[in-house]
Length: 458
Image (cartoon, rainbow, N blue to C red):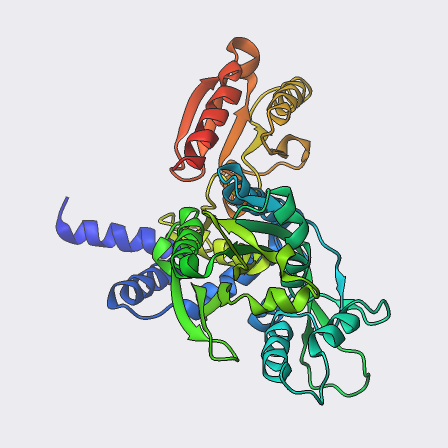
C-alpha cells in the first residue's frame, strides 16, 4: 500500500476516535515531557493522595488538608483502621518479640498538667537551680504534691509521664537490672491553634503515640542513643517502597539538649514522624520524691541512677507516610482510559489492610458465591484479611474491579469462575505485577501464608 494511503488510513482512524483520544495523546506527551525533564509533579501527587485516602476510606472527612492531617483532626475509615492495626502490631513485635529488657505498660490518659514532656524538662531545670535556695523551701517535695493532687488532671500530650511513673515498680520486677525499656502505645491530645476567641476551651487534636522510654547508665547513654536512632530509622525504612524518603535530623530542644528526629519527605516537604530525646537522671529524681535508692539499678556490679532516652512516634503520621510512599502512578496506554495514570497503593504486605479480595467471574452466581464464602472463611481462620467482593451484586468490568482493589492496596484478587466448579481451578491476580496465575482452590491459603511470612522477613 502506498505511504500516502497508510497516512490517510491512520488519520481516518485517529479522527474517528474523536477529540478525547487526541487529548489523551497530548496529555501523555506532556506527562512524559514533565517526567523526563525533571519538572515537579508534587502538587498533583498531593491532591491524588488526599483524594484516594478519602474515596477509599482510609481517612474520614470531606476536606483533607496538610494542616488538618498533621494536627490530628481526622478519624480513620475501615481500611485506615486495618492499616493502623497492622502498623501497631509490627511496632510491638519490634519492641517485645526479640527483646528481653523491654516491658509493655498501659497508663492513664489523665495526668497532672505539669507533666508533659517539655514541662517536665523545664521543671527539672527549675528544681536543680532552686534546690540550694532556702527561700523556696523543698521544691522537689512541692512539685510532688502538685503532681499527686487529684483535682489537677488534664488529658496527656505524650506518654513520658506514665513511663517515668512506672519505672520504680518495673525495675523491681526486673530484679533491679539495667538497661530497662518501657514501651507503650496510646492516645494523646494536643491543642490546635485556630485563632478563635469565641470560646475559652481549646480545640484538641488526637493522635496515637508509640513510645519507648529507655533507662540506662550514664556511661552507656551515648551508645544507646546512637543504637536506638539507627534501629528506629531502619524500622521505618523496612516497610517503605522508597527507604531513602526516611531520614534523620539532629536539633536542640528548648533547653539546649541534643535531640534527633526521623523525618519523612511528603509531597509538600519533610515532616517529623518520630523523635528521640536524651535526658539525664534528674527527671527521675524529680518524679520520685524520697530516697533515691529505689531508683538505682544494677549496671554490671554498680548501682546507678539511670539516664533516660525517650523515643516517641506519631502513628497517624507514620500511616500517612506509608500511604504517600505506597502511592504509585503508572501510565495507562489504552486510548479510551479517562485517566492517564493508574493509581496503585503498593503497601508493604505486612501492613496491607486487605491481603486478598475474593470475587466472581463468569458462571452461575449462586454456586460461585458458595465457593467464595467457603474460601473466605478458610482464609479468615488463618488470620488473612479478606475483602468479600462477591457480595457486590452490581456488574463491574474486570478492569474497573482491579483498579478499585489496586487503590485499596489489596495484594491479590481471587476470581472464582465456572471452571472452579468443574476442576477446582481459579485465577489469582497480583497487585504488583498485574499478572494472573491459575491455581487450585486448595492451594490458595498456603500460598498466601507463605507469601506474607516471607515478606515480613525481608
